[in-house]
Image 1 (cartoon, rainbow, N blue to C red):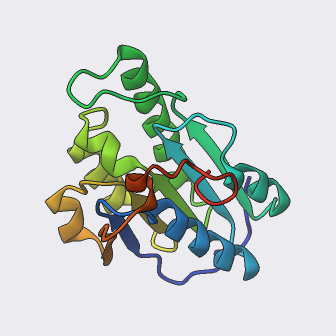
Image 2 (tube, one colour; image 1 turned 180 degrees about the vertical axis):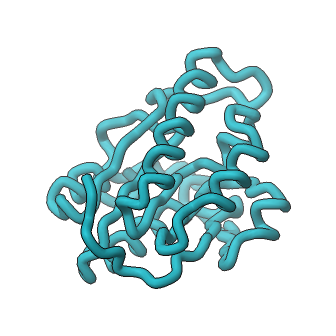
Length: 181
């Protein structure tokens, strides 16, 4: 896919991190806004592989402006002892992310849960920093996930921390289709 004219004169780096709910949701809200202005967006979801996420169907409805691709399994990834399959999927996903970012074909790219993948040791911090440094000037890059590395926070242009104050999951509320998934 190649688009004639980038929509953004200058793309920035945004980070959505913290232990509260809403990091992926915030990035998808940005995608919705960008699609409304005709920007071309790709979301790469690390450490996610479930087909029940509502944003997948939403992206199909916003095609060709928005596409979402998952590069993980639909299972919990152990932080202390990640399965080799998860490491390989993250590695392949990062290779794909590099291709997408460096292609210059997208105005906005979201690397969802990339901060977690770095924190879990599935992707190296140096590789992510290198990708940020080498992204095309017009590409907006959004990095989501808990535990964003301090060096990523330092080089980002915008950092938002989601902080949990109260969550109904703690009272036993189960995930609701269309709201949490």
